[in-house]
Length: 246
Ligand code: PGA
Image (cartoon, rainbow, N blue to C red; front, side, top):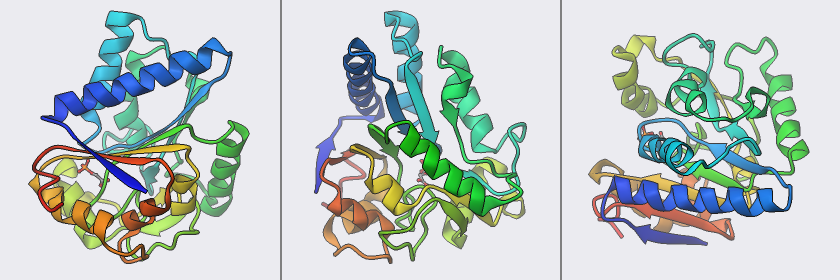
């Protein structure tokens, strides 16, 4: 089931979700348990990451007991490439926190054997006890992670071909469409659905149509975000513009 939560602006959404994450970390670390977070890239989660860094600095929120798994990575981009998601995460979150490097997991876009790397990624999530809270954005194709249409409900972490719409949308970060990779490694829909809680974030009018489809259309591979309707604890955090079609 998808519940929606409307926020007055990006900053308020970021504060609310960061507070939920802080509460979860504090609750679990009291009983000596790690907190496993699923993380996303793109422009949408940036205010959330800025707020988590603020909580770390201003309130001493510690990430020593946090284990992270990122959703996806571009094929062929190594950690030093400024558009790789590994680089993005280091710059925008990890290097500002006290999270141990060994606790950070991001699919390796340079993996020589992507199929076995993806199987190992799934195994590492299971070994960590599963994801407690998964942060998601949504693409205009209806993708979650890089699960482009068509993506079935039972797909797992794997190599995918990026949709032309996604490559065009993401070309703003590369400055040139030709530089955007054609493939990526992504957690699967089934992997995402196994997270105990899901928080999808969407801001702005450009996301209104796909947000409405994700919530109102019958679940199908044609719009992979519709599979979230089958999740028992999924919240869409929206601003008014992204909620316009509801
Ligand atoms: P965006 O990307 O945050 O840059 O809009 C979201 C996504 O593609 O999942």
